[in-house]
Image (cartoon, rainbow, N blue to C red; front, side, top):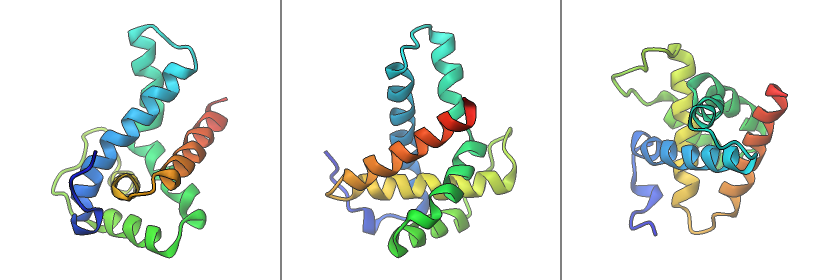
Length: 131
């Protein structure tokens, strides 16, 4: 499906695709929990995709990452996007960009099993925090 090489993209380009991939994982996860009303779907999905949650996930996953994955996350965290979401703290936004870059990088790799593994850990972490 991908026609690009993750190694050839900038951290912000990886974050761009990672944002979409993580959103899809979050939406699928919320649907799997049996939530069906549109407003509830949106509200529940927001728990997974907001900058503060993604920043926390970057920290939670850090020790489980390979050196290469840590480098991708770090570069994404340090990338200067020029904008910050209006409802996000700057540090949360930067760390969430690192998380999204990691997800984008993993999505662009030929073996998606690592993406699946880390996304499942991340989704479970948020569920545990919420429940």
